[in-house]
Length: 110
Image (cartoon, rainbow, N blue to C red; front, side, top):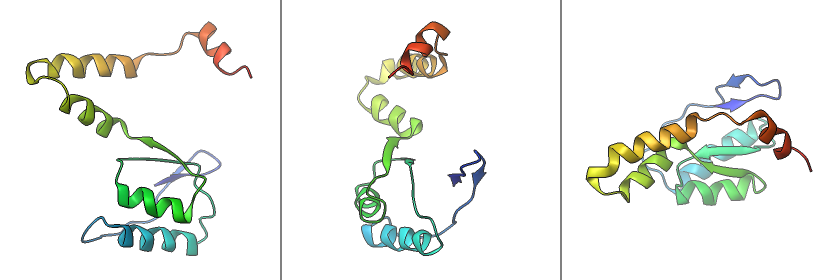
């Protein structure tokens, strides 16, 4: 899925692969390139090394961000089992926060 310059989400491609290796990701990204996808500004995904390698070959200037679900999984994997629920609630609270107006104005000053 992608977001157009107008801000609308669009399905770019649906594909099935038997595995997640670099070759499969190269094939997928080559297909998108051949269909006219010239630039990707940001990818949000898990940190599949095969995907990251293929992405760098086709769209080297793309920025990457770990998706929230995989971020949570990584954090919770490192937390004691008895504390996982408590930590998950704290993470959700952090992500639910809004930026204070006075602070937000300072964020965008160059």
